[in-house]
Image (tube, rainbow, N blue to C red; front, side, top):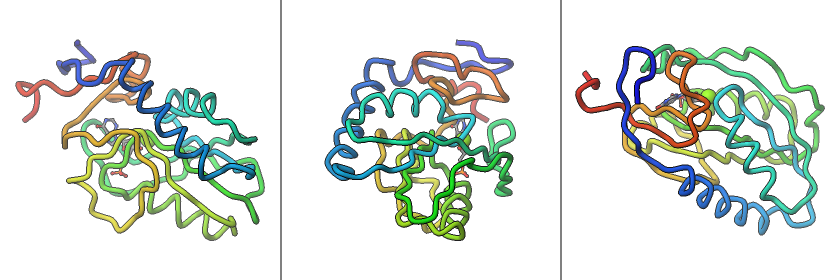
Amino acid sequence: MQVLDKEFELYITHEEILNKVKALAEELNKDYNGKCPIMVCILNGAFIFAADLVREVNFPVEIGFMKYSSYVGLDTVGIVDKVADLAQDVKGRDIIVVEDIIDTGYTMERILRDFKEKGAASVKVACLLQKPKKLITNIKVDYCALDIKNEFIVGYGLDYNGHGRNLKDIYILSPDDND
Ligand code: IMP
Ligand code: MG
């Protein structure tokens, strides 16, 4: 699969992703029974994951959106910008941050700090993917659908320079293109 100038290989099928998303939703259903959290989708990457996840939970829920950016090309730059803030008031609310992928953890560290300042009652992290070997911040990931290798991936919402988000499956950078 060609995305811009890079070659990618099939890594996780759409069917497997959906099974893992359902399993993650089951965990949330147990933990949020009787509650009404705000599930906050971190744009852009988490939009497809969040859309599938919110339709699998069986508790009342509000949906919110925030936008952060840190990645340019294949590498995280370590500087995280808040590009768009949440519309809802989070004071006293339970928050589930819905993120596509935790890499170094810099983005999530910043997001969690922002929520603490806003006075949320609780803040938990639900991510689709985690590259555990690359985590260099001290953040707690409460729910994670899939652990993956320490390689660059695209598809199911994740992009390479803005492209590939619409791919149904997840693709990994070909070894030949990984220099
Ligand atoms: P972190 O701040 O290093 O944890 O990076 C997290 C952000 O970088 C995520 O929200 C993603 O948007 C992006 N990212 C990290 N790894 C990948 C990848 O393999 N493919 C596409 N985007 C990625
Ligand atoms: Mg992202």
